[in-house]
Length: 265
Image 1: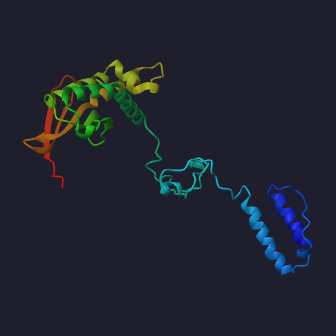
Image 2: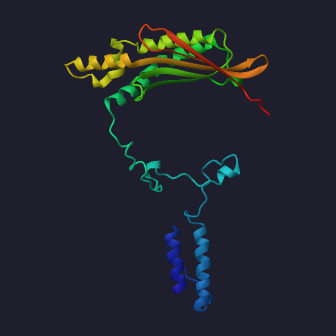
Image 3: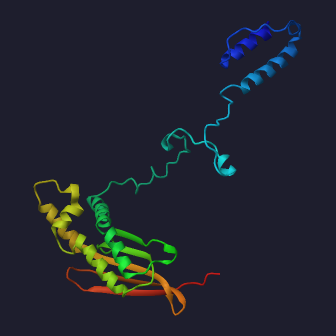
């Protein structure tokens, strides 16, 4: 009786027809220990057919078995996964200091500088340089940084991974510098209001804004650096030219550097 009712309850829990099974008479006289063994066997057989143990054949297989053996992705988002906790960022005093207006302005200036000049930089690179080896795209980074040490605001671009120059690199440097100064001239201008201050310019009293723009433009230095990797006299080298202007209507200063490339074994 015990065995019969067990089979009935297990089958029903796994979605099988809920019908009590009348076991053959020969099993009714089996000793209790043997019934336990038989119960375990029945449970295993029924469990193998349960949806819990059924293999998920609906998902496409990965091309390589090493990938297919990886555990399935969690259904939770990354933020909900119980990752091991750390407090180092929360306890870092510098990271948790509030932003200043200058911090906001620097971030906004870098964003607008990139938006204004990314496309034109690629056009100038194509005009002044051959393509870099292996067809690797040039790297162009625009940045706006303030130095507490000397109190200057550096507005510029760094260009790497360009090929052999078609024209003097200083000409490219001068042209790129001119476009940067179209975004942020080195003297007070309405472009500073729109591009740098943004949401900070909201009060009717414009005196603080005029003073801030005067100080920002008066501290700015425009800078461009370009590096070209190519062969000369049968040897590979990296050639760099940088240029900067420190004051409005001031002269452009140029610097150069060249470094031989180590031979590839």
